[in-house]
Length: 82
Length: 251
Ligand code: SF4
Ligand code: SF4
Ligand code: SF4
Ligand code: SF4
Ligand code: SF4
Image 1 (tube, rainbow over the protein chains, first blue to last red):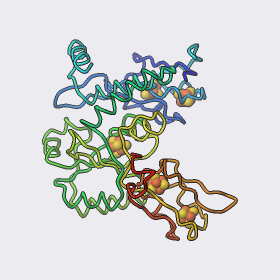
Image 2 (tube, chains in turn brown, orange; image 1 turned 60 degrees about the horizontal axis):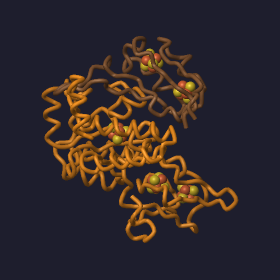
Image 3 (cartoon, protein in one colour; image 1 turned 30 degrees about the vertical axis):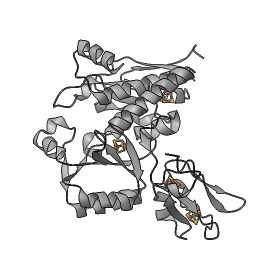
Image 4 (cartoon, rainbow over the protein chains, first blue to last red; image 1 turned 120 degrees about the vertical axis):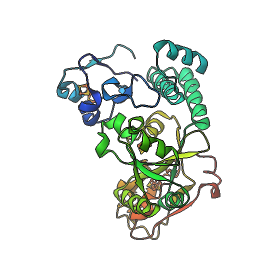
C-alpha cells in the first residue's frame, strides 16, 4: 500500500554514502542507496549513489528523515494513490 | 526484456550489468505490489527469482557448514558488506561483515578501486575463529553464488540490513533460500527461558506465556541454527528439512 510519497531532492543530497543519516535513522529502513551508474573495473564513487525510498510501503510517517536530513532533501507527503 | 533493458542502458552510457538488472526488476516488483497490481508483481517476482537462480542467489547455512567451506575454499578474504552500505549507510572501514572466496580476491587486492574497502586476507583458522564470533553476535551465515554454481561470497546477515532477508520477509521475493535444516523443539527440555527468541532474525520463535514453552514456526524457520547455539537446556535440535514431508518443498 502506498500511504506516503517520499521524494529525495538529489541536487541537495550530494554525498549519500558520506552522510547516510536517513539510511541509519529510519525505524523501518525505508531507504536504500543505489549506484546511479556502474563502471567497468572500478567502483561507483559515493557521490554517484542515489537515495531511494525503496521500501516506502513500510513508512509510518514519523518524519524523522525529513527533520534530520541536514540538507533538507527529503520530503514525505500523504499519498493520493490507494 | 533483458535485451531491451541492455539497449536502454547502453543509451544511458552505463555498463549493463546483470546484477543491476535484477535489482531494477525487484524494484519494479515492489512498486507493483505497493500499488496492488498483483499480476504484475507476480510476473516480475518470478522473473527476478529466475534470474537469481541462474546467476546470483543465496542460501542460509549453519556455523558448522560455513566452517567446512573455510576448509576447502582458497583464498579467503574479509570484504565490506554491500547490503549494509546500501541499506544502513555503513562506511567501508566499519563494514567488514562479508567474506569473499576464490581467485577473484587477488584481482580486488591488485586493484583496490574495483572493490570498496579492498580485501583483508585470512587463514582458514582465522576465518573460522571470526565466524564463531560473528555467530555469537547473532548474525546469520549465508553463502551466495556468483554465476551459479560458483560460491563467491560468505555473508553474515541480519534483518533489515540484509537486502536478501528484507526482500524475502517483507516482499516475498526469494533471492535467499532457506537452509538444509529446520529447528525443532523438545518441549520436555524447554524451560521457556526465552534466550532463543532474540537470536532469530526470521521471527520464527515466540514464547507461549501460559505454557512457558518456546514455539518455533517451522514454516518461518530458515534453519540458521542461531537459536540452538544459545539454548542452555538442549531443547532445540536441527533436523534435515527433507526429513519432514511437510517441509521438504519449503525452500
Ligand atoms: S517518515 Fe519515518 S518511517 Fe517514513 S521514511 Fe521517514 S523516517 Fe522512515
Ligand atoms: S539524510 Fe539527506 S543528505 Fe543525508 S543521505 Fe539522506 S537524503 Fe542525503
Ligand atoms: S548478504 Fe549479508 S553480508 Fe552479504 S552483502 Fe548482504 S547483508 Fe551483507
Ligand atoms: S532457549 Fe531453550 S529452553 Fe530457553 S526458551 Fe528457548 S528453547 Fe526453551
Ligand atoms: S528458529 Fe532458530 S534455526 Fe530457525 S531461523 Fe530462527 S534462529 Fe534460525
